[in-house]
Image 1 (cartoon, rainbow, N blue to C red):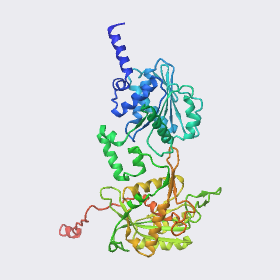
Image 2 (image 1 turned 180 degrees about the horizontal axis):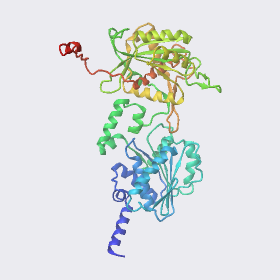
Image 3 (image 1 turned 120 degrees about the vertical axis):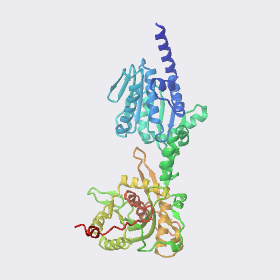
Image 4 (image 1 turned 90 degrees about the vertical axis):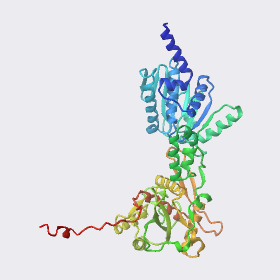
Length: 514
């Protein structure tokens, strides 16, 4: 063996002993410190055959997927001459598993040792004798029978159903005692990732072997200063306590069940305004109406397509008038409720002229209408009379979930600002405002497992106010939540006073020229 060849072999062996050096010199990628610690711990368990289970929780866009591809390439190179299998499970085939495959291909393509030697067959990649297979962990996928002899990865584990893992995925290491890694972004405590986090933490406490890598935005920003700007923007837009900010950037779990509007969130919706500062009809400004139609919730859909309300006692049509104001430091506006109106047992034919009159009296620039079920007819009539102003919204499980998340973002961002002077009054507006806050206090939510992160939210059927014994509904909440659709409008707030430039009379300018 020549001296040059011996040096090459020695250098290769040195790189293969250290995954961080391998990524740097063989792939051209320098791992960040927080990535290196994760990579080395997993590789040590794999190489030594320890069969540990790791939980790795990274904030969004902090390099989790790149780390996975670097780790997988390293193991394929290290075990190139050994018949081993890596199994990687993603919540869906498209786009998640396909994206993971593309990331691996990109790293393999620039690796100095494997760039020309790896092969692909559908979702299986081979380098020498070592193989990695990508699978879908969706509930309907048929993945029984695969075996992970070297490593089992579950990506975005918060979106894989625990039952799917226990039945179809966990047996893949039953005969091999392979290392397992659950990758993901924090979500609810009852997710697969949350369950494995508690199990790994307990085992880590018993033997001192680090198994949990829980990264926060602060740790990422310490190495990537530009990342802080992204986090600051999200906090400014949604609020630090918003579930998406807490989970995606600060790795904090949220409860999958409970009250959607705890006291601190309700307090965030309130501002103190003197009574003399209240808005009167006809006062200049930008206004919009939000209409939740009686009985038109997502409910239960019959075979003939008709909707039966999930809460049959919810028979009130609720309308909220909001004033739209500039958002200060945000590009998005803030909303001040200035008037509420409610109708019980009133037909669409009676409602329509009253709503049209309100819209004209207040010169509203937008009207969001619940167009679900029986609301569709009223919405169509309003579109005819108020052309260009009406935005319909149809409630179903998906749209209602998104509306809920959007409304939380709007509230936590301080953009719903409720004037509290009415609470001290005994009139109709004060009563409806108190009803709104009682509904908020009893509104419950449930985050469903799975990649869509659907949320069910409502005041449960049959809920009664402990003080009065009256049934509580959620009409006012849904009416308020429709405000989220106003964000799509161009409100075009002027940054300063209007400037009028007087033009010359063109007839005078032409006088004497002919």
